[in-house]
Image (cartoon, rainbow, N blue to C red):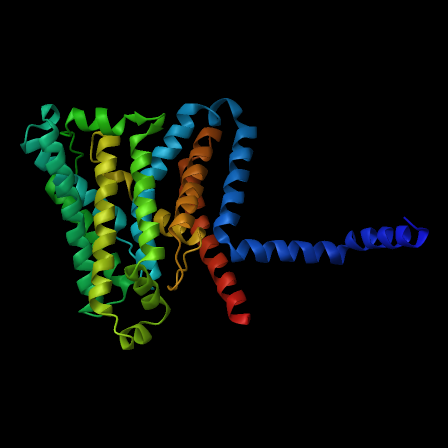
Length: 351
């Protein structure tokens, strides 16, 4: 290498280390992560794991803790897939948690009438179908209110949130029902396949199917088209009203699947355990790259985004932070998710 070339390379190295060059690199990295939010969330998730592992390696790195995180994310994640479809249309579903609870209450009562704890697989199959169907009915109610009564989705699902939870409390007298057949808990809730909990595999199956439908099918294209511009979709021949109803029914049905998974995991209805599911599913979807304003959605991102608030809650519990701060953190994560979405949309509009 000549002296001139050596001086040039040294000069370039010095220039690359100047504050302006570092700022440019940081800006390009930030823009790259905003353009691919699911990858950015994956980095954040890994950083969270490292942080909590350093703070409490004895507890956080244990197999039991990772299993608990995976199981919690599985139940929430199935409902979040349905939320992703609703958000893709430009809507929102605040009733997810209450619909889940209602489905579990109806299902537990039916299985209790068919033999309760000692019942066999017949009762379990009927109970799961009832859970999904009962939750899907609330999804149908949401869809009809939004499309036929033209009530904004925010208000419509906020109303059904209270209605579904109230109905569940009326049916159960406000008490958890513990008549879930033991075979459901033993062979679904606790069962592993190749070392992976069966509930997690169910979540992954739902996510793969949901992602393929959203990405590869006419149904998925229409879902995102409605979120981008409902009037343009209508002029293109998309049956917007019917499609929106089907999306809310899908969200309700997946909340029912999540409810059946919760019954298998806890062998009880856990009426008070899903109060923040609506925020968690929205935060998970938006953090993963689904736009809160419709038109852009990714189920793969939702899977990653769902693990963020769940891991955060688990880490807080292990570190010993009060539960009140856990609720605060979930709300903060939701605000962060919306902020990231706004920044991403702003960058896209400037192009």
